Image (cartoon, rainbow, N blue to C red; front, side):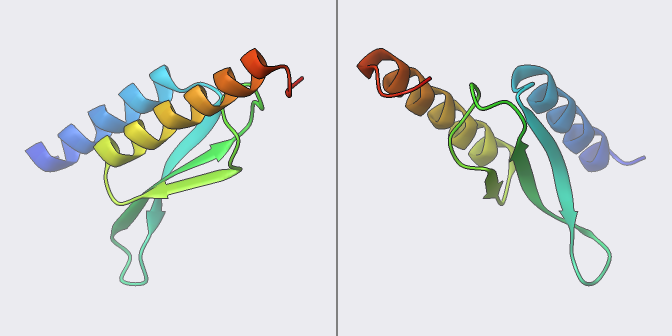
Length: 81
Protein backbone atom coordinates (compact mmCIF):
# COMPACT_ATOMS: atom_id res chain seq x y z
CA UNK A 1 0.00 0.00 0.00
CA UNK A 2 1.50 3.35 -0.96
CA UNK A 3 1.49 6.44 1.27
CA UNK A 4 -1.34 8.11 -0.65
CA UNK A 5 -3.60 5.08 -0.28
CA UNK A 6 -2.77 4.81 3.43
CA UNK A 7 -3.51 8.52 3.91
CA UNK A 8 -6.84 8.22 2.09
CA UNK A 9 -7.76 5.16 4.15
CA UNK A 10 -6.98 7.13 7.30
CA UNK A 11 -9.07 10.07 6.06
CA UNK A 12 -11.97 7.71 5.37
CA UNK A 13 -11.68 6.14 8.83
CA UNK A 14 -11.63 9.56 10.53
CA UNK A 15 -14.68 10.73 8.59
CA UNK A 16 -16.56 7.56 9.51
CA UNK A 17 -15.65 8.05 13.18
CA UNK A 18 -16.59 11.73 13.22
CA UNK A 19 -19.82 11.48 11.22
CA UNK A 20 -21.53 8.29 12.37
CA UNK A 21 -24.93 9.43 11.08
CA UNK A 22 -23.67 9.03 7.52
CA UNK A 23 -22.38 6.07 5.56
CA UNK A 24 -19.16 7.40 4.06
CA UNK A 25 -17.56 5.78 1.03
CA UNK A 26 -15.63 6.41 -2.16
CA UNK A 27 -17.25 6.23 -5.56
CA UNK A 28 -15.64 4.17 -8.32
CA UNK A 29 -14.87 5.91 -11.60
CA UNK A 30 -15.49 4.34 -15.00
CA UNK A 31 -11.80 3.46 -15.24
CA UNK A 32 -12.02 1.53 -11.97
CA UNK A 33 -10.08 4.02 -9.86
CA UNK A 34 -11.45 5.66 -6.73
CA UNK A 35 -13.47 8.80 -7.39
CA UNK A 36 -15.48 11.25 -5.31
CA UNK A 37 -16.03 11.08 -1.57
CA UNK A 38 -19.68 10.35 -0.74
CA UNK A 39 -21.77 10.51 2.43
CA UNK A 40 -25.23 8.91 2.52
CA UNK A 41 -27.46 10.09 5.36
CA UNK A 42 -28.68 7.36 7.74
CA UNK A 43 -29.62 9.45 10.79
CA UNK A 44 -31.88 12.48 10.21
CA UNK A 45 -30.32 14.15 13.25
CA UNK A 46 -26.98 14.20 11.40
CA UNK A 47 -27.95 16.19 8.31
CA UNK A 48 -30.54 17.40 5.84
CA UNK A 49 -29.38 16.33 2.38
CA UNK A 50 -29.70 12.59 1.73
CA UNK A 51 -26.42 12.44 -0.19
CA UNK A 52 -23.38 14.71 -0.05
CA UNK A 53 -20.67 14.34 -2.71
CA UNK A 54 -17.32 16.14 -2.72
CA UNK A 55 -14.02 15.69 -4.55
CA UNK A 56 -11.87 15.29 -1.43
CA UNK A 57 -11.98 14.40 2.26
CA UNK A 58 -11.50 17.98 3.47
CA UNK A 59 -14.37 19.25 1.36
CA UNK A 60 -16.59 16.39 2.53
CA UNK A 61 -15.72 17.08 6.17
CA UNK A 62 -16.62 20.76 5.69
CA UNK A 63 -19.92 19.89 4.00
CA UNK A 64 -20.89 17.40 6.73
CA UNK A 65 -20.03 19.94 9.42
CA UNK A 66 -22.36 22.38 7.65
CA UNK A 67 -25.04 19.67 7.55
CA UNK A 68 -24.81 19.30 11.34
CA UNK A 69 -25.10 23.05 11.72
CA UNK A 70 -28.21 23.14 9.52
CA UNK A 71 -29.89 20.50 11.71
CA UNK A 72 -28.90 22.37 14.87
CA UNK A 73 -30.40 25.63 13.56
CA UNK A 74 -33.65 23.92 12.57
CA UNK A 75 -33.98 22.33 16.00
CA UNK A 76 -33.23 25.62 17.74
CA UNK A 77 -35.86 27.43 15.69
CA UNK A 78 -38.49 24.84 16.60
CA UNK A 79 -39.15 23.88 12.97
CA UNK A 80 -37.68 20.39 13.30
CA UNK A 81 -38.53 17.18 15.09
